[in-house]
Length: 463
Image 1 (cartoon, rainbow, N blue to C red):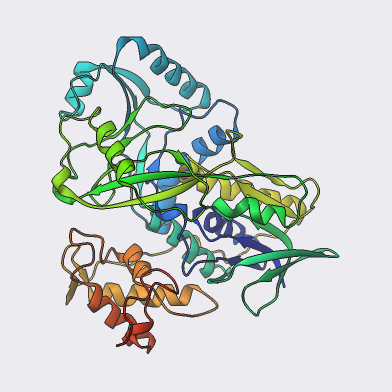
Image 2 (tube, rainbow, N blue to C red):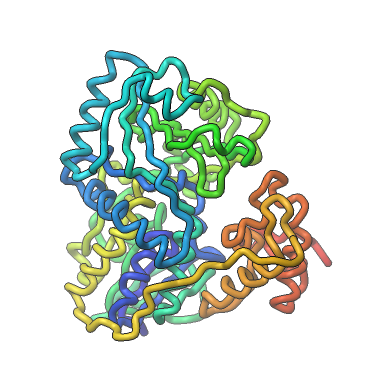
């Protein structure tokens, strides 16, 4: 029995959990995957948007501005990678300069500071690799980049340190209202119930909503495909380079990552499959072609991997964060597409305030505000591309396992997202056997049981 149950352990659910853990609530997070951050939170651009794009007055605009403001201090409190690198929205002809000026005006109305339009010479001075067709750019100095894995994990670990119970591999397949409580029907043998339920289930949030409410919502998966390049070309651009946005989003961007790679994408394709995170030849070709409009030369030989993520498109053009009209105590946090990552800390604050309005609680006197990340180690190097040591990997295994109340098998991807073992040029070709050995030794299990991601993705048939 909990006061609050959060369904979904992505960046949104983890930010809500961390914010709620400031109060004297008993809280649980139910995640259907083997780790936190396995949905859209692990497959996005890693951009902290300045806040000029969202329509003035919308929830997106408010949450984006507040989230962007909170992020620098949070990165220090919770020890995740963040860099204020600035961004440019590129304009390729005189006719579209007015659209750039409208973005500037909207950004000012939204409360964004340090915005200006640069001419061609100014753009080239800041970005020598820029395509010669670029005429103007909206320069947003407050835009930044972040490690989305680091943000999500740090929020989860800090929430857990403050008493939040995290459960993995538990899918909610039904919700029953029993007097003043909601009872979760799950795929596990455990019974979960709570006075307040927060629906932060990402692309599946419409399914969870339909379990308790007659008010219909439909979330359409919008697939975005990306290309990741080696660190040898990570300094091709210093800023995040956008193209003028359309109704489908901000277009194909080019950006450095906080770990010094180069990232290009995403595409924007509405699909029917909520598990459709496969990449396509046509989608990746589109990324290359559109990115070529922004910079002079695409270093295609330096591509080390590709991936795709799904954004939850509600068709309403805004975030939906409210208590369901016909289901008191059931709070929806759905349709969180871009700029969801940027907005996550602010959404955490907003959702926590809704909970406090329904069920007030006292502040914790012993709230732990800081969290220390896994430090770079010395000793035996296991991942040569990223220079990750045995000590770091062992610590990642322990932290992953200790995060969850229902202990289980730690995946290779969980280690990768925490310390980057396998994220380098060889894409885990060298270090996978060694990481698997360390997981097996640390947990006392057979190597054949270790999955890449979750159950069913084991790499070995037998040891």
